Length: 345
Image 1 (cartoon, helix red, strand yellow):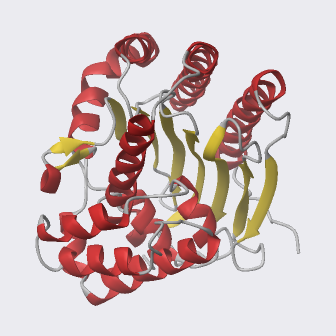
Image 2 (cartoon, one colour; image 1 turned 180 degrees about the horizontal axis):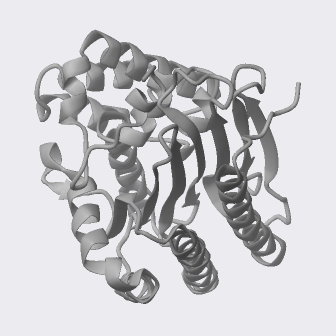
């Protein structure tokens, strides 16, 4: 069964927007593989929501093992056109994470989505954060200048929310070095909002490609210690995604039909002992969650597909058992109503 698309023009346009960003990014990543790597193109994997009746999505996954640890460029559209009891009309999103194999080449996370509500309201979510294992000040400066140039009047708000959202209180540090996050973003001009989301996405994609193209070419040597630093940072990344990230948790609580895709942001290997040790840093009942996540990893900390499925199940089970723990998750200035949007009005 194929995916049935949303019917409203706003949702159709939003889906076209995120698909265009997906193509732009994948084409540029494929070109890097052609010129610097194994010349292996990203491969598309599709999934359906309720056998396609309520949408679905596609993700392009890296196959170049020279350039990428793991990389996924996901696009989805979930909608309830036929179910007028739902608060949500449609949600169209691109969500992507690239983890290069070279520890001196930074990771990136980008999320851009439009949520359209049954009552006619709609808002954008715009995120971008640079995640190096080993900080390079030039990369940081280039990325931050791009954010400033692309965000216009939203800059101060986006930086403020980003710094708040990607903070990890239990470890007294942030995930990443540069963060931009707009939640519930909308103005009185929907066309301008859409143009902003598109231009921001295109600009961040192009900026990141330029950063890593240079890094791959000029930072070819790295040490065993660099690899250890990267492993520990990847552990931090997994910890933040699975214990604090509302987008990840919301996706897992809404349905179980794209668990591997939602877990696509996770690096291939993490430091199991380090992750276990952080259970002492978090508040109850999050210590149970961290212990359970670490326990499904093998001694090598390998995050393969079966492990991703187990990790997704653990997160879902934990928050169903402890719904009050959702209040401990990250937020910007407002807490998104993602899960409740999928419930009845």
